[in-house]
Image (cartoon, rainbow, N blue to C red):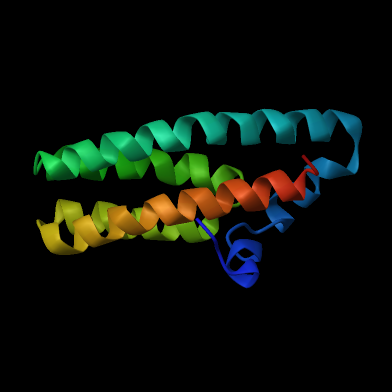
Length: 122
């Protein structure tokens, strides 16, 4: 996928990680958090897509809720905001909105991945 650089730059609030990047111990923690996100987010995204495909909106809401925290921890605030909307729509029984937003999450996860890798200079 090719993304607009401005979109990638705004996928992550680097202020969330900035204080961690000030010293070696913080950089190690930031890298661990990012590695966790890079592993967990794609797997949970697949779980979200499976829940949508199965019309299991209770599972969709639960998965989205759990992924909000993971995303927020690394500063992927735009993804976290979309996931909160997924949770709200899935809980409210709005399948069309949930499906559309879960599809948007795939793009947001990839943009967050790119932004995080850049933020820590990988």
